[in-house]
Image (cartoon, rainbow, N blue to C red; front, side, top):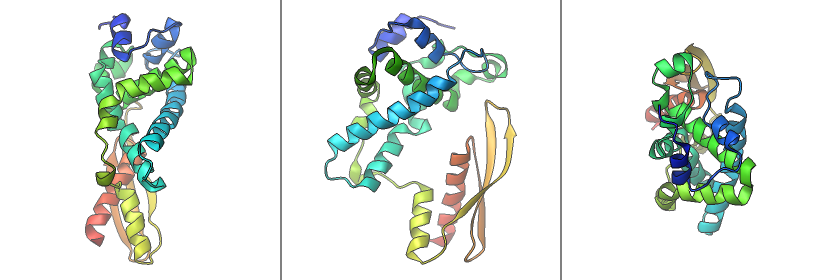
Length: 223
């Protein structure tokens, strides 16, 4: 596995003063106790603030709900994994055990987490201004592709608004089961509407994605 971190730093557009931060950002919990989970937590928050500020500045006529949907489109797992692949983060990850054997370098969740960890590491190494420069650079393609007028609402939001328009109670979600490994879990979630006793289940690699899948099925019925 390649570990040419100079190449990665060149693609990111930032050279780390403390190379240990970069190394940690690329270390999965399956490899070592010295891993990127805490950096992922930090990077997730830093990314949210930066993207929110960028959208606030660019789209002065957009209301809160629309800005929220645009941000969700930019920071969702699929988008983060896509950017991580463009940066070839998978070539630099340290994975151990089942994560390495199970194709973890191509796992969307692992790649998305690594990108958030990288952003958290930049923030710790050089501060918020540099983190914003980095985010604007590596997210340039995705930020440029945003069309406020065509930003779709996610199924959970659409379902909630549809039920409210009908004067019905809001949907409830229940995790039915969690299977698979800790690195690649499979969630089964039920979404139900008490008023008309409708229930649908959805599956996904996270609770959130399973909830969205269940909500999408209910939408198809209610429409």
